[in-house]
Image: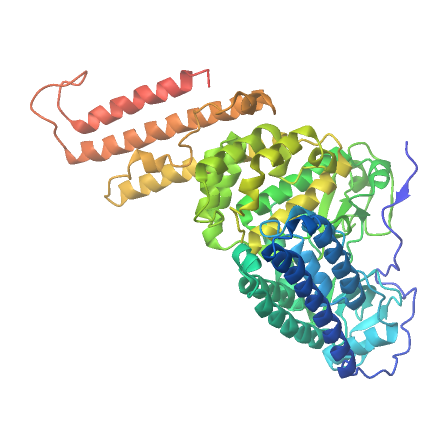
Length: 617
């Protein structure tokens, strides 16, 4: 038996007893407006950087090109990587908006070269914390009352510190253990000034034709401004937590922290303390009996549901935002009182084989809700992945407005099919660094370099944050289970989506019948599986990943399709029969009469029997 281990760093517990840590005297600190001179210095630094970028572009990519001095031009990749490195240093120094901008641009793989986005991925939003006294003063300013009327204790040391806010453990005035997220004083003023400057930079960049052709600069700036302002509204984050909790209310294996509404404002958010075991602490999971492989499967399926069912996505699944709560076994529950709350953060958790657990997500500042125009396209994308159908995936791109109007669709379909056959991981973020330098990846990029560089796709912000979440999820699942295979999880999920869509189609047809209308054409009824019975275009598609699962998925879809056909024919026959629709005066087939409805019922019965007896794909 493994040695029992603390599930997280112990925190001061208070379950109705006397406080272990007395409240500190309230500091007398006045919040001051951000120094105007500091704002001007920030502006000069940013303007100087972008002027440098403009001069660089004019010299290397315009003057030398116009003078036909291309042999003297150095490779653009190294030059732009150098400029990106300088931006990283500037962003880390200034923090605030500029770190967020770098993180945002690292997701824009649709408009920026891979070499640039990879360079920006390493930006970390970590800054020295504000003093304890400043945090207390900020809380008092938010609530317009003395600190000890809201909290009886707050930790002097923050759990984390970022450019927009920092987080502390605390006790509410009623004695509940909590975690408090507090915006930095003056951060909204800083962000407003930085956004004003960013909009000006965006207007400058619109005059650079190669950049303007590649991306809609104004739209990107507007999107980024919306994302940043959302992160500054902690009331909005609280609503995101509540929506996520509602989406997974029927799953006891998923949770979000409870919000203490009375101790929360737009600048201070107080939540339940859920600092259990970090999802990347493999040894801690194993020592209490939780299977890392089971955790990988759970977190992956939770995100599949967010991507393709609820359409509301926690878009920042790095390990610091994902915790695993050890749940008690039946034997442990029986040994405790009825009102035992289970294991709390800091409790000693003994080892138990295959211990149940709960996935707990925190930090909903980056929470994306897919607009209705994208939802059907996302379901089609998931089904296309399950069927390994390049055309269906391309159709989902077109439906969502991702594909540019001048894109070569046949060539894109060929490229997507190659991804499915040889680089499956690129679709669900499972691409590892070693895969990017392998022969298959090299051959892929060599073959489709011109197509990729023409920027055939431009994604909306919501989809980019979904892709960001996929990439981060890849790292989480791979660390938990190095042999994790997304296909084994995605195929059954896609089969469930197909079944749901077909059932909904049948239900819609019967509703039409009850309303006295004929069902829609069977072609539209079966739109969810138009090519389900088709074999993969390339042999490799069936052999590369789980061929038995591919065959089983297609067989299931075929049978479901046949059942829907039978249901549609039967429903049509019943309505026609009830109305006495006649074909002619000549007896037909097995029926002595000429009732068209009976024909449909007969055909539906034959179709149903064939579907039930079918054994092949």
